[in-house]
Image (cartoon, rainbow, N blue to C red; front, side):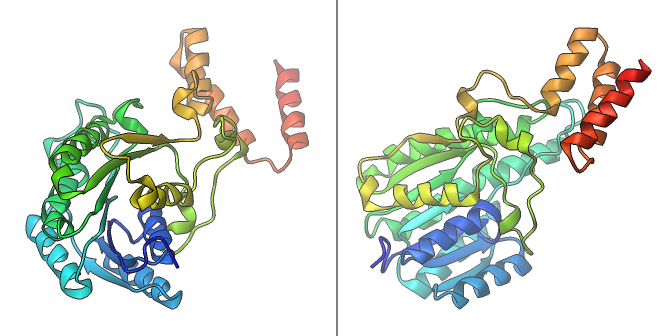
Length: 303
């Protein structure tokens, strides 16, 4: 018997990445799964995979920023399964990384529409069916709601808004016995949950600066969602939970960007930092530490 036997979950953006891992974990634990996604090919792929493993799953094409799509999708889920018990608002897109001056209003609006408005729309139209019995809404936010890299304004704002939406919904929906929780993941490698799956390209450096010793996996997020959506977490609502391997409480992020920025500051020249970065990138292509050491020795001997 699974924790979610007889229950129905809706996972937006559930065709790939973190969303797919969440949908799979809930399905393995007994949930009937409805995947909402804008990628038809990936959605069909994922549902067929789930069905082959005994999970009762359906795929519905939906752009979560489109009110009609969302309303129709929730109606279809209820028509098929006669309930909606768990809603995971996972669908999200990133921003371009362009500077503030280069960011367009269309980009800002699209990111906010998908990442924030989409979660509001899904909650709005799922609640009609969730309030029949106690339910849970889990919003997938991000540590970028609290800390930022340069030029991430649309994304960071959308995730910060999602956390505020979470505690607002938690209070509004408490009268129906519906709990609402946000999760803020840090760096998660989704390679193996893409369509088709990819091999990870992470390096030891990527893992080493996480206090937990590694970059996150979609399964880490899925395990937390499964707990929070279960009756075991019945006293948890309205909060945001950070799951990032300890990175956000660490004083320094040790990566190539920090090395470049540190050297640029040391020599008071950004070009020097970029040149050192180029050297590092080339050294990473060598197969062994011994090869790297020998090449560095050659470079030092020429100085």
